Amino acid sequence: MKQDQQKTAFEQCFDTANSRLKMTQREFEKVEMYLKSNDITDAYEAAFDFAYSAEQLTLIARTMPIYTGHPQAQKRMEDQMIETVPIKIGFTQEGWFCVKIPALLPKKQKGGPEYISGALWPAMQRFFDGKDRIRYPKSVIIYRHVFDRNHPERANRDHDNNEINMVTDIVAFYVMHDDSPQWCEHYYCSDAGDEDETQVFVVPQDEFQNWFYSMENGEDKDIYLYESIPEQLQE
Image 1 (cartoon, rainbow, N blue to C red):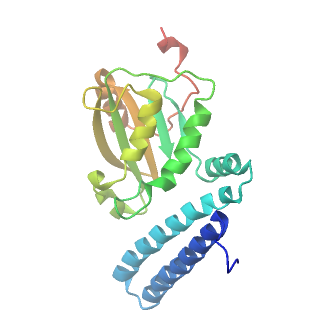
Image 2: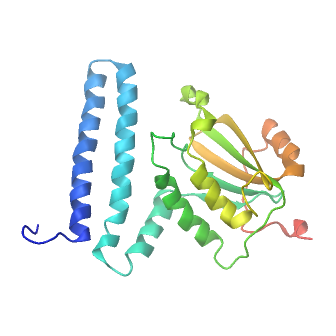
Image 3: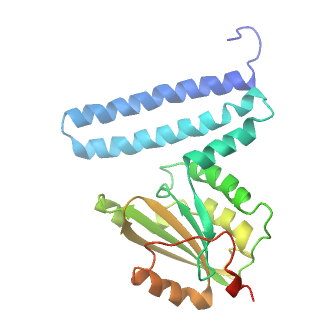
């Protein structure tokens, strides 16, 4: 490293990553310590601290290649994020817009929403490449938090404490007039599934009851997502 001159942006990023890596290691060691002493309560809290630190490390790691100045770094990183966080995007057979994120959204002040948005932005850009943006009429944006049924304690997550604003902004940019009360209502719910997942739907307000009925009757088990709104609904 340079001693007598100002460090480059890449070197500064390296130092930040190194510091966060050591911090993450310490948080992991706390989890291990509590686990070995059978102190599950403290291990549970320490695991969240470790997860938060690991997310911050991931965010730093994502920027590191870009700081090298390589012209392909940004594109390659976006491709990597799409691969490592496989977000599913499309339209249901009813014409509702849907995004499936393979994780529960982080808690406010506990997790990094940038971790999700960093993958959602390029995924949405790629999905709508060559497509016209959709502008649903007055609609309901729905957050359906699907938790792994093997971890029922997650059913008690406080919906209002999840980081949804950044996701809403991205979804609204592509498929809504606006996410203000004039154009949009919000609905939050939870359900058990085979794995953690956040499902985001945009449904016209006059079709919300149909969406609710389909979820209550288990019609969500195999939601097939189309690349575009089914032709019979485009009239």
